[in-house]
Amino acid sequence: MTRANAGLLMVALLFLLPSSAARAGDSAAEAKRAAEVRKKLESTIDFSGFEDPDTKLSDALVHLGRIANVSFEINQKAFNDEMVENLAEKPVGRAIPKMANTSLERVLPRIFERVPSPSGATFVVRGGVVEITTRRQASPLRWSWGQVERVVNNNEELPSPKPPETTFAFEKRDLRDALQEIADATGVNIVLDGRAQDKGRTPITATMRNAGIPSALTVLADMADLAVVPLEDAVYVTTKENAKAMRSQQEKAEMKPTEPAQPKM
Image (cartoon, one colour):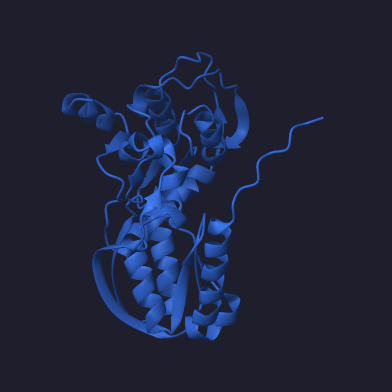
C-alpha cells in the first residue's frame, strides 16, 4: 500500500500500524483514553449490516468507526507474519445481517470470522484506538520473554511477536494499581493472584519509557517479590514459588507429544 493510500485511510478513521508494537504513551493518559473507547464499544447501536460479501474490510471499519466515533488500526505486520497481505483490501467474505440493540464489540467478531489468518483475528483497545491484530500477536504467551518461538508456517523459526510497549512514572504507587493502569492503557489482561494481595499493596516507585510489557511487568513484580507467568490470553502475577511450578507445567505440556487422531469407525 502506498503512503498516499494509507493517508486516505487515516482520514477515514482507519490506520495501518507499521509494526507490531503499540505506540507507548503515558500510561495514565492512555488508560483514560482507552476507557473512553471501551465505553463506545459497549454502547448500544443499530447495525445496518453488510449485504455485499465483497465489501472491503477497510470500508467496513470506516463505516463502523463513524457509527461509534472510534478509530481503528490494522496491525499489518502481525498479519504479514501469518501470510495475510493487505488485509484492508480483503473482502468480509459473506453478507453480515442487521443487528438491532447490539454493540460494536459484538459486531466486530462477526466481521473477523472470515479473515484468513491461521491464528484468527481479534481486536485490542490500546490507548485511544482499536487495534485489529492476530490472536498470535495479542497472546502474551507468544511474546518474547527471552525465547524464540517456533512457527509452524513453512517450518521457519521466527522471532516471537513484538509485545506492546508502555511508558509510566509511578511514585509510591501500590503494585496492584500500577498493574491495573498498565492493563487499561495497553489492553493486556494482567491478573494478580488473590493469594498475593498483601504484596500487591507494595508501594512501587519506578519510571520506564517505551518498555516492552514483558520487561515492565517483570521489573514491577520483582519489586514486590513476585513473578510473572505469560498465558495464552493474560499475564499472571503470582508468587515466585507458584510461578516456578506453573512454568514447569507449561514446559511439560510443550514437550508432551501430540497423539494422532483415531480414525472414526
